[in-house]
Length: 91
Image (cartoon, rainbow, N blue to C red; front, side, top):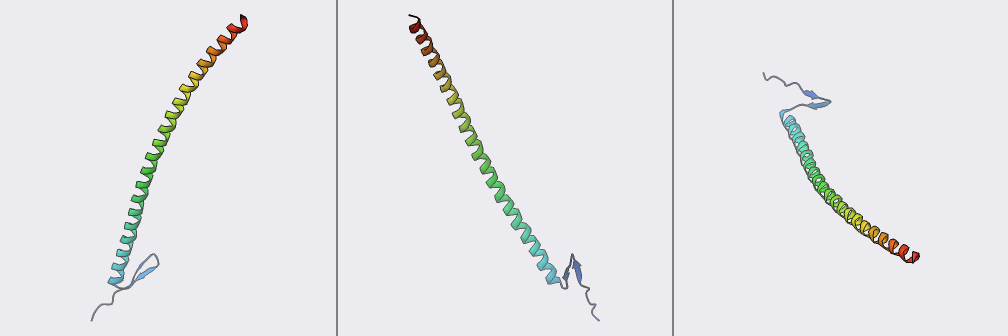
C-alpha cells in the first residue's frame, strides 16, 4: 500500500504536495530576483545622482573662486580710488 505523505508546514504555510512546494520555491526565487534588480536600478540611479551632485559642487566651487577673485579686484580698485580721493582732498 502507498504511504501517505505528511503535509509540510513552513511558518503557517501548509504544503501538501510536491508541485505546491516547487511553486513556492519558484515564487520566492522570483520575488528575490525582483528585489535584486530593483536594488541594482536604485544603486545605478544613486551613482548617477552622486555624479551630478559632484558636478554641481565643482561648478559652485569654481563660481565661488571666481566671485572671490572679482571681489578682490573690486576691493583693490576701491582702495586705489580712496587713495586718490584722499590726495585730491588734501590738495
